[in-house]
Amino acid sequence: MTSQHHHSPGGARPGGRPSPGARLLGPAIARAAVRAAAPGGLRFTERQLYYATCRVLSPGSALLRRLPRTPAPPLRLTAFTRALDVRGRHTVEGLLPPVPPGTGGVYAVHDGDGKGDREGDGDGTNEPDVYAYGLPRLLVCQDPSIARMLLANHVHLEAACPVLTAVDALPLDPRLTAALERAGGATVHVLHDASPSGLALPARIRAALGPVPGVRVSSMGLVPRHVAALRLPSGRGPVPRPVLGTGLPPGLLPAEARWLARGRFAEVAAVPPARLVRTVLRVTRGSRPPRASLRSDLRGLRDTGFLTWPSA
Image 1 (tube, one colour):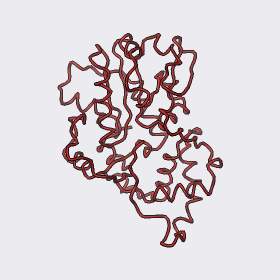
Image 2 (cartoon, one colour):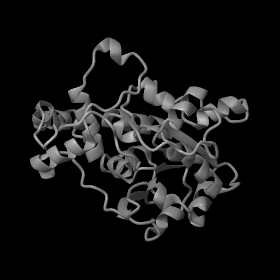
Image 3 (cartoon, rainbow, N blue to C red):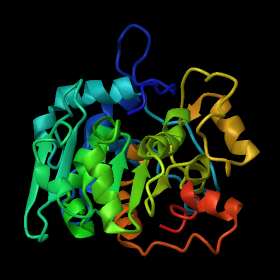
Image 4 (spheres, rainbow, N blue to C red):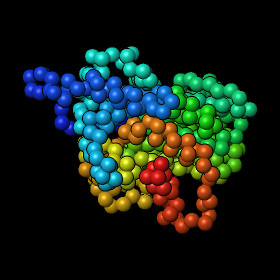
């Protein structure tokens, strides 16, 4: 999860008196929870509920939804958190508990015959069967809460794809690397925020993996281009160092680099839960495109996830 804070119009007036908008938050959160869970009773994180509430408060017209934008959230995160505290998190059906601070989150592995499944905490070393077979695909999530959400909705079962957080995955366990190599043509998918640290994560994993034959590291996004195409709310944090460069995908457009240089960022949690689940399933279950027939620039675009989200 990114550590930056959202800067947007507040939910309270000076002096602590709640604004008219703040008084509407209770019903807005209730409507947002219903939307976040659709279809089929999806589980969702608190940050996903926050962005769903933003969508309830700022639905926009059909025309505006077709225009690429990266709008600021219409609601301060602190105002949402206060309203949720007052309402009580236990009253929101489908809301997942927060990931304990200081932990890497959760992971899931499959038994070798595909019939069993386990979840746990930590780095996975207490589940040796994850290393005993070839792993054709692996999903690494920057945000531990998003990893937990995907597991809670059984994405790892439908995609037959173990899920790790970046904290769990780095440094890569040599046994995990061997399992990827053993599969032949394995892909490590990386799901990350549109932020300097998120965009650098696939390169970090690729460097940690080393020259393993036949294993590809592929970004699932987000990138600034996706954020604009999907009209996701974006925050503004501290301006990063002038050189964004090391580890960032070479396929970034100049406008995207300028967007990042202004301190802008967008979180995977801003993607509606149903759309996130559909995209992750489609990408992880999809066939691996041939590498040898593509030019390096096109391969760079594919590997940075530019061909993934807008059509999701």
